[in-house]
Length: 109
Image (cartoon, rainbow, N blue to C red; front, top):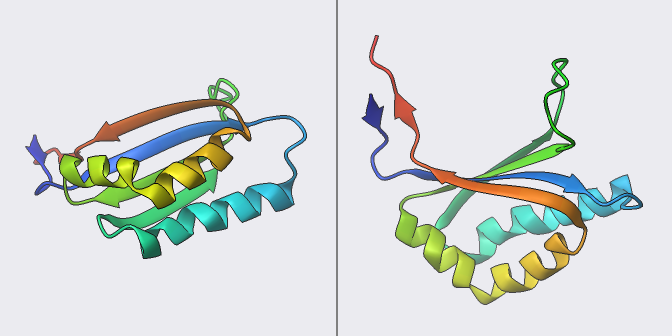
Protein backbone atom coordinates (compact mmCIF):
# COMPACT_ATOMS: atom_id res chain seq x y z
CA UNK A 1 0.00 0.00 0.00
CA UNK A 2 1.20 3.47 -0.85
CA UNK A 3 0.35 6.58 1.14
CA UNK A 4 -0.38 9.88 -0.60
CA UNK A 5 2.38 12.44 -0.85
CA UNK A 6 1.87 14.04 2.54
CA UNK A 7 -1.85 14.60 1.94
CA UNK A 8 -3.86 14.26 5.15
CA UNK A 9 -7.64 14.06 5.45
CA UNK A 10 -9.43 15.45 8.52
CA UNK A 11 -12.81 13.72 8.83
CA UNK A 12 -15.69 14.44 11.16
CA UNK A 13 -18.73 12.23 11.61
CA UNK A 14 -21.43 14.23 13.39
CA UNK A 15 -24.91 14.06 14.76
CA UNK A 16 -26.58 17.42 15.26
CA UNK A 17 -28.63 18.00 18.39
CA UNK A 18 -32.38 17.58 18.18
CA UNK A 19 -33.87 20.98 17.44
CA UNK A 20 -31.06 22.14 15.15
CA UNK A 21 -32.94 23.08 11.98
CA UNK A 22 -31.91 22.34 8.39
CA UNK A 23 -31.39 26.10 7.94
CA UNK A 24 -29.01 26.14 10.90
CA UNK A 25 -27.16 23.12 9.50
CA UNK A 26 -26.88 24.89 6.12
CA UNK A 27 -25.45 28.00 7.81
CA UNK A 28 -22.99 25.94 9.85
CA UNK A 29 -21.91 24.09 6.71
CA UNK A 30 -21.34 27.39 4.88
CA UNK A 31 -19.31 28.62 7.86
CA UNK A 32 -17.23 25.45 7.81
CA UNK A 33 -16.64 25.76 4.06
CA UNK A 34 -15.56 29.39 4.49
CA UNK A 35 -12.63 28.26 6.64
CA UNK A 36 -10.95 27.20 3.36
CA UNK A 37 -10.76 30.93 2.50
CA UNK A 38 -9.41 31.90 5.91
CA UNK A 39 -6.90 29.19 6.84
CA UNK A 40 -4.17 28.56 4.26
CA UNK A 41 -3.29 24.94 5.11
CA UNK A 42 -6.93 23.86 4.58
CA UNK A 43 -7.12 23.01 0.88
CA UNK A 44 -10.71 21.79 0.49
CA UNK A 45 -13.86 20.66 2.26
CA UNK A 46 -16.35 18.03 1.15
CA UNK A 47 -19.45 17.16 3.13
CA UNK A 48 -22.62 15.13 2.85
CA UNK A 49 -25.50 13.45 4.64
CA UNK A 50 -25.74 9.74 5.34
CA UNK A 51 -27.57 7.93 2.54
CA UNK A 52 -26.67 4.36 3.50
CA UNK A 53 -29.36 1.69 3.47
CA UNK A 54 -27.36 -0.48 5.89
CA UNK A 55 -28.47 1.46 8.98
CA UNK A 56 -25.01 1.15 10.58
CA UNK A 57 -24.52 4.90 11.10
CA UNK A 58 -24.96 4.69 14.90
CA UNK A 59 -26.86 7.97 14.81
CA UNK A 60 -24.25 9.94 12.87
CA UNK A 61 -25.98 11.87 10.10
CA UNK A 62 -23.35 14.06 8.40
CA UNK A 63 -19.72 13.76 7.33
CA UNK A 64 -17.22 16.59 6.79
CA UNK A 65 -13.85 15.86 5.16
CA UNK A 66 -11.10 18.47 4.84
CA UNK A 67 -7.86 18.07 2.91
CA UNK A 68 -4.47 19.28 4.14
CA UNK A 69 -0.93 18.88 2.79
CA UNK A 70 0.51 17.64 6.11
CA UNK A 71 -0.24 16.85 9.73
CA UNK A 72 1.52 20.14 10.56
CA UNK A 73 -1.12 21.87 8.42
CA UNK A 74 -3.85 20.31 10.54
CA UNK A 75 -2.11 21.50 13.71
CA UNK A 76 -1.95 25.02 12.27
CA UNK A 77 -5.63 24.83 11.30
CA UNK A 78 -6.70 23.62 14.76
CA UNK A 79 -4.87 26.48 16.47
CA UNK A 80 -6.02 29.18 14.02
CA UNK A 81 -8.33 31.77 15.68
CA UNK A 82 -10.94 31.43 12.89
CA UNK A 83 -11.13 27.68 13.49
CA UNK A 84 -11.28 28.07 17.27
CA UNK A 85 -14.18 30.53 16.98
CA UNK A 86 -16.05 28.39 14.45
CA UNK A 87 -15.41 25.14 16.36
CA UNK A 88 -16.98 26.60 19.51
CA UNK A 89 -20.15 27.43 17.56
CA UNK A 90 -20.18 24.19 15.56
CA UNK A 91 -19.57 21.88 18.52
CA UNK A 92 -22.29 23.55 20.57
CA UNK A 93 -24.81 22.32 17.98
CA UNK A 94 -23.63 18.69 18.02
CA UNK A 95 -24.91 15.79 20.08
CA UNK A 96 -21.87 13.71 19.17
CA UNK A 97 -18.81 13.77 16.94
CA UNK A 98 -15.94 11.52 15.90
CA UNK A 99 -12.79 13.07 14.43
CA UNK A 100 -10.25 11.04 12.47
CA UNK A 101 -7.16 12.26 10.63
CA UNK A 102 -5.67 9.88 8.08
CA UNK A 103 -3.27 9.68 5.17
CA UNK A 104 -5.06 8.15 2.18
CA UNK A 105 -3.46 5.01 0.82
CA UNK A 106 -3.83 3.23 -2.47
CA UNK A 107 -3.61 -0.49 -2.99
CA UNK A 108 -1.63 -1.36 -6.09
CA UNK A 109 -3.47 -3.78 -8.30
